[in-house]
Image (tube, rainbow, N blue to C red):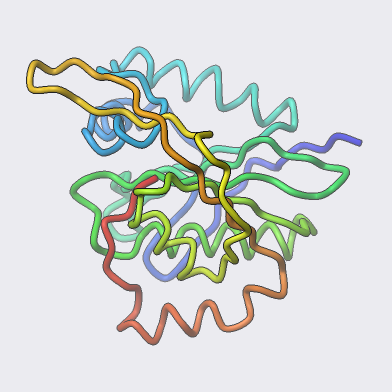
Length: 212
């Protein structure tokens, strides 16, 4: 059984999660060229506007239409500025599960945007899409991403040893691969109980260096 995610928008107190648009090309390319994004993701470095356009116009629509995933542009409600990306991938419609990841622009870190966007996405998946499981994978040394997972109520299920390739940039600008472990997290519908209150208890949304 294969389904397809709808082309929808999700609003929170501070954010709007919406489909990527070609107007996002410059901001997306700038965000992807951040050193921390290069370290913890497989985004090519350097990342061009042409690659950003390909993601927006080709990759994202294809993944959605094939039922494999969904890409949200995370924007500020007031300014409409792109602050990050939330991505769903490896979706299993029979099991009703998907893998969630997030990237936050360097200038927008420390505002709790990753937690807010991830929690809103999870609530939508469990309520509107009737999903039963969300999975996150964070590199062993990516403590900021792990904090986001914990903040929205995820449970750590264990470690995939040597399963992650991180990246280190040398002084000359070249990148090299470094193997590390993946920590696997899961989120079920019942895990969301109190997650919103936990975020609110931290003066709205807690401050992290939010990226994955």
